[in-house]
Length: 110
Image 1 (tube, rainbow, N blue to C red):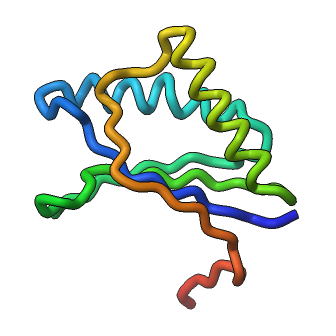
Image 2 (cartoon, rainbow, N blue to C red; image 1 turned 90 degrees about the vertical axis):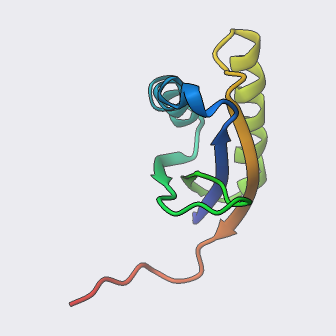
Image 3 (tube, rainbow, N blue to C red; image 1 turned 60 degrees about the vertical axis):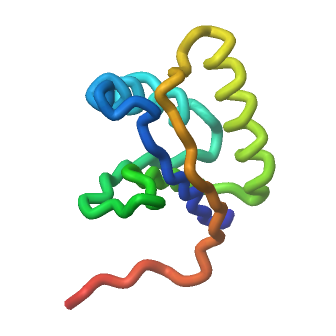
């Protein structure tokens, strides 16, 4: 089984509602993502020095799967289902996304 990383850069569409956005992301969206088979973890980061064209948030979705496209399709279906159930937010603004395949084991400093 291969390891993958889905990288998504996001912004809050209304900066005055950023707390609401982060609560939605952490309490609703992340648990929904973790229900998708193959998703191992979701980690969020905040860009503390964003420029005008840079996203404020970085979201890393770690996946273990033989076929990443099955997982990405399931993630899209999950998002569509969540939207139909009113579990999405108009505050989510995706800046960019990419899928990476792990090619080397992690290394740590000694």
